[in-house]
Amino acid sequence: MALSMKASTASCAKLAAPQRTPARARAAPAVFASLREDVARFAGAAGVGIATLGLALSANAANVKLGAAGGALVFEPAEVTIKSGETVTWTNNIGFPHNVVFDEDNIPSGASADKLSHEDYLNSPGETVSSKFDTPGEYSYYCEPHQGAGMAGKVIVQ
Image (tube, rainbow, N blue to C red; front, side):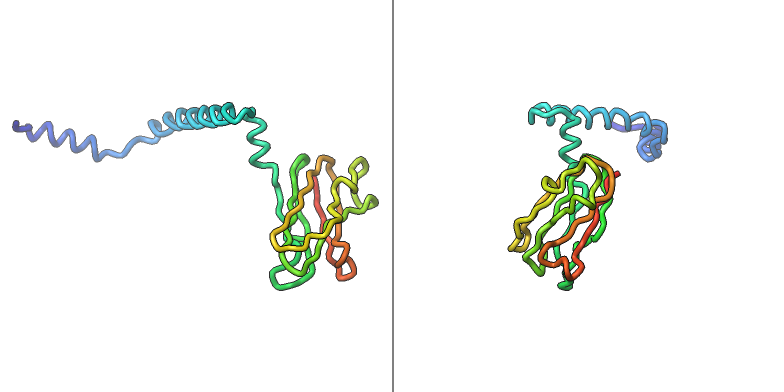
């Protein structure tokens, strides 16, 4: 069972040679196609379309803390920018009770301050509320118990 030196050297050279970029580039579309098929199978098994699955994964565009870690009565961050149809979630952090109130004079025409606002107080750490924004424009809001302390924020919807 002897191998000729010439055959074994040629085999080793093939194994040691780096793959050429064109071969990897040709393989990439197959990998992505396989990934798309896997996602489509998962979406079908879950009873949703791929578009719906994509919206569900990106629906929560921004997270805002109610009260800064250092104890300041602020929304953190004070301003967020999202796309139309996305959601902002506010999480009770420190210095509560807090709430999120939109003033109808400081939101775009056609948007509902009542639907966006969460006037009930959040009294425990980690409690959350969310609002979905469909109308582009600037939305100013505040925390009712801490409005006098300047606890205000803004959502910009593009």
